Amino acid sequence: PLVPDGLQVWLTPILVLLLGNILWVGLVTISQKRLDTLLGNSSVMHMGYIFLAIAALIAVPGNTLAAPAAVVLMFAHGISIALLFGLADRIERSTGSLDLSDMGGLAKSAPSMAFLFGIAAMASIGLPGLANFSGEILVFLSAFQNYVPADGLGPVQIACILAIWGVVISAVYILRAYRNIFQGPAVKSTEKAADLTLIDHIPAVLLILALLAVGIYPNLLLNLLQP
View 1: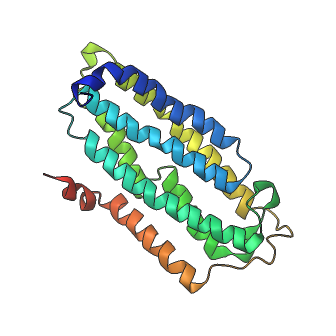
View 2: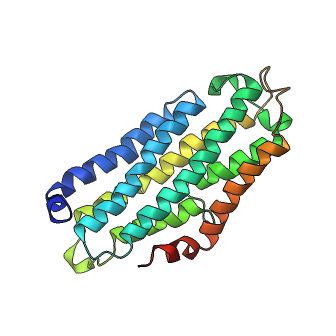
């Protein structure tokens, strides 16, 4: 009874909740003091964009971009957050802590870790050329599919404009975390930290290749979604 017509009644609450996901949880993420809780909250935040695509499909049932956008972003976020959590585990093993206040200068002793974490961080905030950008831009385009300027902005378009601020929030928390962990002078916990081993590199590089492949050529995934 809820799919698809019944969801029309719930469109406004869905829009309010997804904006809460993006903006409110984004601000909560900025306030986190540990890398693991920061990444966990950022994952919750990005679910709001997936629900924005779902809202676009509810508003216009014939929306051809909405479902592929949601799938691409689910794939991209799943890959990037797995990479970030995997590297966070290595950071904790090397330094004994995930508190951002205990970190600093890790790039000096673990340059490979810093490089790979940097790529994952750029994917998380939607840098062009990586899969998250493909998913997010499709979500934003799906919100404006069949939009008629003469009719004015609808609720989905207004929610989309507000949701774009989440990209700014993402940049704030992930770049600040990167700076706190890898930049600046080394501290006691990081000055002799071990870098990634060859075995550690293999899964990380495979995940980055997946992000690059879908980011540069999204049709690799989109073609699989055609009926």
